[in-house]
Image 1: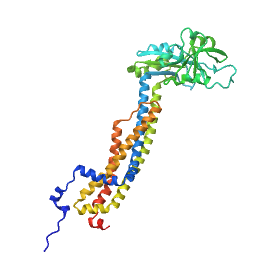
Image 2: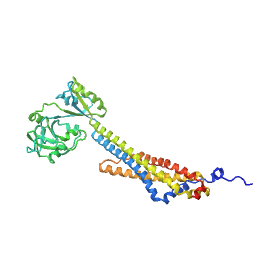
Image 3: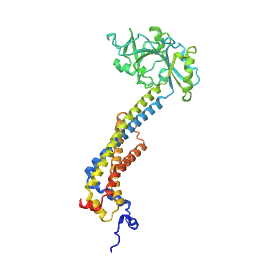
Image 4: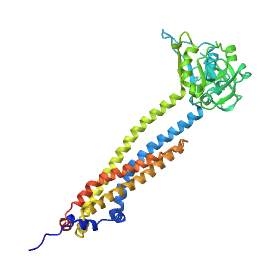
Length: 407
């Protein structure tokens, strides 16, 4: 009478003797990849595209934000602007003529300057230009300290001083000079019906973009020749960083104690921050698209592993007949799926970083790809690889040796 048939799956001694070393599992896991390199590359490419898209989106957003932070650090976030609002009847209010002096008395205010739009004083290149074609340019009477307050820089020429501010001299904003075709100082332009000499041209002003389309003249000549009444339309002030919010609260009551609600105070740097917030919302949308691409790549890995199991049934049967356990087969195919995903993840991380670097260089941004994003990207591919390879690995391990060899 024959004894019980020996079953290696339930023999503890056999299990202890049959443990695979890490290097053996790695070698077995690369067998399918080395045997079918084209299929492996195409499957990894799906993962790589998804990871590259996600890393590039985060990297580009981070680079843009780094540029904004550097820009704000250079320009400062302590600039506030004061403008007239509306009264109780919905009519436009005005700022008192001594507004700049009042603002300068507030504790913490370091600098203050003003600009006053001159109604009806349009800007033309010459008297030959059609009066209806002013190009959206306007004229403003400005204080001598305005340039320093808004952090402006001159592209060429000089800023208005006590001498030039008393004579028909003008400083053009960057867009005003561009639209008028002025590139050098000494040229003549027409303000209303009077010719003035260009003494300076400004670089673009990030925190005061409204001045880019402005022709700026001194307050003295504005009063003498253009009817300026001394009431500013915008007052710019800079305070110490720790006093910004306190000054912001005091400005309306200081400028117009009788009707502080008619004074509007804004912070130009908030507009840049709002723009960044809008960019972040768009970034979230792109991340969603990248996640879809990553999911499609994971499905591609699962499809590849299922086909690999079907094609390698004889190999599975032979290994099982030679003593390989279900755990061995499971580890082999799961390792293969992880390696395939890791290959795509590393390639995608490199591709996403390269795309970020190119876009950052084209826009003159610092390249900023957070290391944790790279680690998270590769980690996500491994998780997807494990999920995608789990079912094929279990299916391969459950394949009976006899049916696998006969098939």
